[in-house]
Image 1 (cartoon, rainbow, N blue to C red):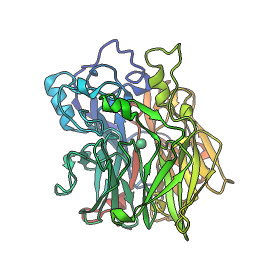
Image 2 (image 1 turned 90 degrees about the vertical axis):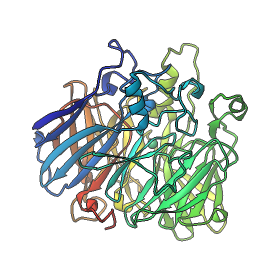
Image 3 (image 1 turned 60 degrees about the horizontal axis):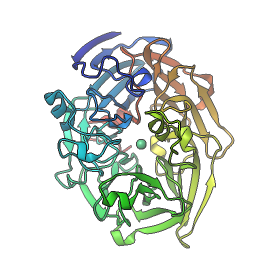
Image 4 (image 1 turned 30 degrees about the vertical axis):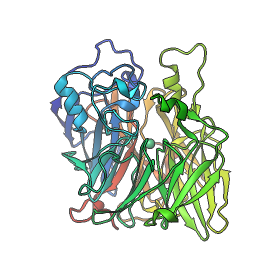
Length: 497
Ligand SMILES: [Fe+2]
């Protein structure tokens, strides 16, 4: 492996840091690397694996104002490119305006999600307002550009998916109102080249939905009127419809009126799903009601005759309870532990003739962070890859290949102390069948103090990795990721097959 440090950031975090999500598997990096001819520790990189695996990571460079929450951390992108049996890797901080301001000040300027926005020393971004837009939640590639986003809404930061060259925010010619920004989880339709976006806010109409065309124009943008401020995290789409949501987990309105942001789960208020034709007008939106829950991530949606099917993760216990023996980090730990959410794959079926919704659980096991084959997003899928979680932690300790037909579930459990990442499906070059694909994941190995990218055969996940590729440095655990085939990165193109 040839590896070079191209930038090293100053050490600004406390030397004796004991924050559980700035140490161990979540220890942030300060170095940006360019590495090529990566060492293959085991197996062989398949020659029909050609594309880029991109992952975003919460990677704080400065201490917090008050308490630090792991989702406040500054975005760091990791990109491993596979081409003709070889691999190269780069990582770069997302050069947000907030990070630049804090590095210049040499101190934090914005309070995070665990503190009152009033503590921030400057105005900022986010549905909550006065937050630093860390651009650390999600990453997706549209029209050959990586777009990183923040779950509380903010700018949409652009970079080159292979070099991670930073290109600043995307506002689609100013058509995306800067005071709203964009939520994490904009959705790419690889089959049309369109990008579907949403945002949310404390001000009416509380949500907007938009479509960026395959030629890069934000040419559809409509209000989604909600009863009040909500905390949506994700959206879904089928070939015909976009699906927004109004779920009964939101800031307590009475406390919000006094300036306090306390999220509560209202177990007597139904979940509501807003179904709108992909380019529909606001008045074409139809609401469907279902049992109360909160959903962090949708798996996929597809049209089925007069029905619309939506798969996602139903949380049986959306809010952590406070306990008398709680330590300083206990509630924060439980609030991001997938097992504590008790999230299971679930199917909602919306009958477009009657306006009724029926529901069924798809699997018993607590999992989350699902990935569907990119060409099947918006269409009927059979398989998805999802993650199991270390008890009490936001750390992925296993991969599960789920089968919507319920007969062909497979899994791989990582060794103790080895944590994976959200693991996208990487189709074999030139193949379109759903199982003709690999699964890629970054691994943080606390035993060997190193990181790897591991490659699995989607058809046989239970055989373990078919190749293990060494990274130059141990990387932090993070949240979202994506796979983009090299054939989708043509300069003029965009991901239209
Ligand atoms: Fe997410």
